[in-house]
Amino acid sequence: MAASGNIAVIDIGKTNAKMVLVGGDDLDEIAVQSRPNTVVAGPPYPHFNVDGLWDFIELNLAEFHAAHGVAAISITAHGASGALLDGNGGLAAPILDYEHAGPDDLAHEYDAIRPGFAETGSPRLPAGLNLGAQLHWQFTTMPGLFDRTRWIVTYPQYWAFRLTGIAANEVTSLGCHTDLWDPHLARFSSMVERLGWRKKFAPIRRAGEILGPILPGIARRTGLSAATPVCCGIHDSNASLLPYVLANDEPFSVISTGTWVIIMTVDGAEVSLDPLRDTLINVSASGNKVPSARFMGGREFERLMQGRSQVQSAADITAVLGKGAMLWPSVEPSSGPFPGRPARWSCDPATLSDGERAVVASFYLAMMTRVCLQLTGSRGRLFVEGAMASNRAYMQLLSAATGQSVTGSAGTGTSRGAALLASAKSRPGPSQPEQQPGQGSAALTAYAQEWESGLS
Image 1 (cartoon, rainbow, N blue to C red):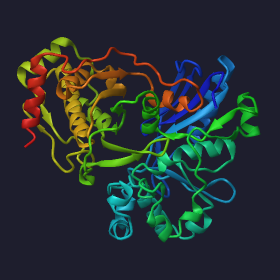
Image 2 (spheres, rainbow, N blue to C red; image 1 turned 30 degrees about the horizontal axis):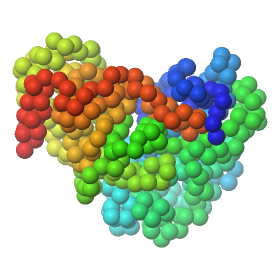
Image 3 (spheres, one colour; image 1 turned 120 degrees about the vertical axis):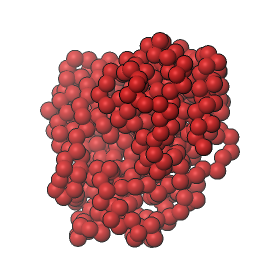
Image 4 (cartoon, rainbow, N blue to C red; image 1 turned 90 degrees about the vertical axis):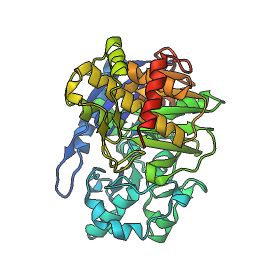
């Protein structure tokens, strides 16, 4: 479908939820509203406040339509989540917060039944970061839940179901370190078949497929046309990737930055992915395998800054380079390419100004990104989406460390990528000038080399 009007995008991130109105012809963002994606403590376990999110969605659909008009709706949401729908279309159980450690209680049992990395490209992750581990824990610890479950749907498709009443699944979310999908054969994993879960999964539809129009009640409450079409939806990192897949014939990598920094490499060098370093195979909207790596960069940056000012100047960058102030991994050791390794400073961080601390934190994220690019065989251009694209220190060191051209797009890349599902536009343009290979001072290159030497 190619929308001739504005597209309302539901963008559910782990930390924040957004509603974004995007122009269907130019993919420019017309309006953005956000709210925290809060977690309800329980019972029966920590779970997402979907009713609060739904009120937020309907309110902004109404306001967007009244002010600008809404011609179509698209959806993107974080991975590692899914919904269990009962026969009446409600939730058979709350949607588990994937950071809840409950599934770890059955880790031994789950490890005995999960497929290997060679089959799924899905590393073993803690808590509920493998959706398969969530389902196993829920079905095991909640008697009768499996029987009460009519459909299992991935998270973007849960919101599509709320909008249309049509249950579906989609490969970018199924292929996101779930243990549920075999990306080599483009089918459900052997575990899904072996445990008898396959009959519970709603049919698979394409990300850009129109599931149907909005439900009549939603049309009445929001003022939208009852014929407003709703796209099936897409995993958020893959939404960032989509415009570049469509627009580039040469090798490239997309770096999606938010709570997670996700590195996705297309047509890179041949590499053997290491599941112990948080590498994995993602699945693009077209069903192709995408070698990927990740770390919780946004979360780490917040922890490092501890509420301090994040403003950094050229003088701060110069001062950090002069001091050789460095931070080595890992600030968040439960994920990323250096699991379990404690963070280490080259200096007392208390001696740094807020601006200098922001630079060191940014340099740390740039070098962690560099490591992930190496792990995925990156070559060619780099496209940085999200918050770090407007971070001068991050962008400069990333360019110097990799020798690859870097383009930044500081807008809501996931939202624009999701809007592309309903638009004829091929890709959004970058909002920042390109950093040419090796651009920056020799001091930046020397800093990157010293950081890498300090890893050992």
